[in-house]
Amino acid sequence: MQTRFSPAQLADADIREADGILRACVHCGFCLATCPTYVLLGDELDSPRGRIYLIKDMLENDRPASARLARHIDRCLSCLGCMTTCPSGVHYQHLVDLARARIARTYRRPWGERLLRELLAVTLPSDRAFRLALSAARLARPFARMIPGRLGNLVSFVPRSVPRASALDRPQVFPAEGKRAMRAALLAGCVQKVLAPEINAATIRLLTRHGVEVAVAEGGECCGALTHHMGREGQARASARANVAAWSSLMDGEGLDAIAINAAGCGTMVKDYGFILRDDPVWASRAARISELARDVTEIIGELGLDAPQAPRNMVVAYQPACSLQHGQRVHELPKRLLADAGFEVREVPEGHLCCGSASAYNLLQPELAARLGTRKAANIERLQPDVVAAGNIGCIAQIARATSVPILHTAELLDWATGGPLPPALARRGTGGAAA
Image 1 (cartoon, rainbow, N blue to C red):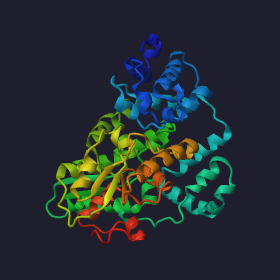
Image 2: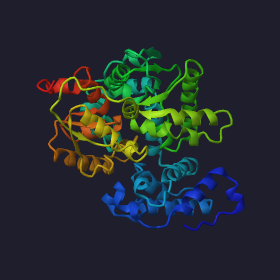
Image 3: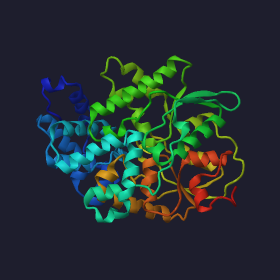
């Protein structure tokens, strides 16, 4: 794609980055078939190629973001399916992130949208604020259908009960069982440890059983993905710097072999810290090192080798690959192979390349499109008649659970159970798994 940026514009590092990305695009349109919003809406401007044209026009003409551009960029899930299918290697992720930041700086949204985005940016990245907000919102949950607009949708996501905070998420070290093979820091997360603390518990058991010493660092916080996807650069970078500082303290102490991450959306973000903080003279080199160390939990277990399962589970598992894992991190076959090695019958979900509609806070900001994608995903899952669904991201788990009665668990929970851990709570509540144990 030909671009027409002036020398003065190209003096800006972000514009230089955008110029390189835009020039890589050859207008081929391969991205259309793998874009969830284009599949649903059939609108060229709701495809990666159409959004690229809108972004190019805004940047070349150095104009503020318009309501039209904001609408089509807001509809993008950042699922990155287009990057997997693009034959030219267009780095759409960085381009759309740049566009979101410019929208946040130059476009004034209607007051209702501003209020909702501010509410999400304050509560979701903080486990304490999120827990408090959920406790308060539970009072309104019975009336969710009577509350109009996005606020009613927001209330409908509130769970019937909020698990107690887990002591495992506090800063501490969990020693490896047997000979130590690796030392890893665990990203404890924000939303996940409030909604499903059993995921971190299963991850710690799984890793320590396989010889990993697990450290939860003092000062770690939200990875920053939630605010990054809303264009709030300052807040996202502050979160990134906080985590880099926390993990660097562990690196400077006993050292680290990996950063273990069990939320795929967070993994994609942390693996991009080196790029996000590339121009920060204080943090750039350490951020790049942190990105190199970042691993999805399945990557760590794959490297170490899965222990032999304690007993065959005789269960059909529908594996739903999180977009951030398969497209953002290019981890495709490994989780399925580990589940099969653990004794499960693994079936791939049809249209597994299409997003379920969670996409960070997308299901809260674009509820209608997210609901359509969630319903489509659930229908594809149910066609397989599985006993359980496995996914590697809390957003996917929460989104899909709204649309199907099939139990859905984190991949780490199933691997933990198969190699000696307890029956996952979601299966215990349904009385599932006893015969297979």
